[in-house]
Image (tube, rainbow, N blue to C red; front, top):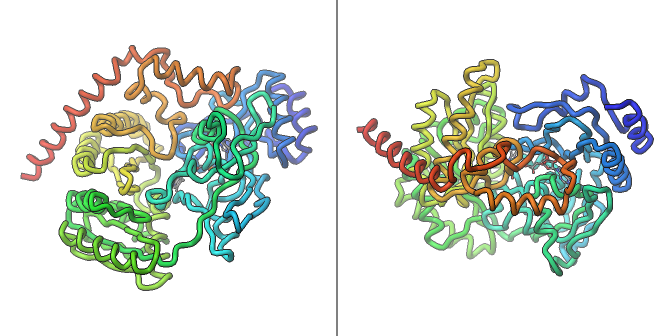
Length: 492
Ligand SMILES: Cc1cc2nc3c(=O)[nH]c(=O)nc-3n(C[C@H](O)[C@H](O)[C@H](O)COP(=O)(O)OP(=O)(O)OC[C@H]3O[C@@H](n4cnc5c(N)ncnc54)[C@H](O)[C@@H]3O)c2cc1C
């Protein structure tokens, strides 16, 4: 990058507001998906919307790629500077600007850490519902970009259901305000378009979010099962019974081993093939009734232990295990890649069996810990990044797992986004016409493609090169039958 551009950036954000130091740039060469890396040329730390807009205008003037970055906890490579250029890191915009307790809303800057908002409004009996497991670190701006979910999104909805209004810097540097403080989306639903656009439509600089009242009563249960099939059936049966728990999370044996060996040890039973962490909230009387129904469903599905957290400390400990699970994998593997797919809940047993078979075939361990209630799987492929052969095999295994999920009628992502990681899987679901329509939408927001290039769309020019998605997924569906039959025969 030309030195004059760095000088001009420093004129905008101040001498300390930009770095092109090679050692410092190492921090920004990837997000939490460490499999893909590329360094930006420079990182800037703007202090307000005007500075963000001025940086964007400068990037346009010189034709330099640029992209926003929050806390860098993304798991699909969204904050990766694929073509170098400028990373606009938004951590300085980290203030809660106002809280309206009566209308239960808050106005925040994008760099506010998700958990900090709930902590700041706790004394008012309020909280911010979307709770990614990364909530101690991830930013609300990053949540908006990825339409982040979390354990409690089963009952309360994803980020998109909690964003009322945004201020954003468009790709050409103009500042726009979309949505309304009352949540009415008048005219085209531009907030809806922006949430989940993975940092490729605009840079969000202010967000008005909905706050919820803390429930009167909360109960947390841990149910342990000797077989994955029984636990999966319990998940389906809970939902089929018309119960919507606040959260319904799945933790398999491999994850339990990692968690229990780590600082997040939560007392999960090590002899369980799978455990379910189930939370119910609402009015006291209703919660008691629902708890009894859930215990009944779990027992009918052969749970050998159903434990109720008896205190807030016990409850927090059970959650610490789940929310720390990804981090705990470091106890059993040097590296991991966290996949993200959604499947119909009723297909959980066969998909988990198929994933186990694929894991054996590719000789790569896979752990499973995920938001079971909404069918949002997170197979964690464990590997050693120092071994080139293993790194090579991850791609094949990841693709095979995705084909299985899509083959049962699933989707490529529940919450982590497509980013770089899954862009070449888009042809499994969409054809060239579908993708052309999406490209046109992107073109409206980001006509020159300078904002966060190289994301979401497949690198190949046409999906026809890999065959129609329908054929591939039908083929995958056939293979699932094979895996499931094969696993059955192996057990016999
Ligand atoms: C241990 C762990 C657990 C996780 N658990 C969950 C989970 O339960 N649910 C879930 O949904 N995700 C989860 N994630 C993924 C990740 O935390 C979320 O995707 C989160 O929303 C990313 O926020 P961030 O601030 O780190 O964004 P970054 O990683 O910095 O960026 C993510 C994307 O958002 C864009 N972006 C960032 N800020 C802005 C902005 N202000 N305006 C426009 N675009 C912007 C970036 O360009 C990038 O494309 C987890 C990650 C980890 C490491």
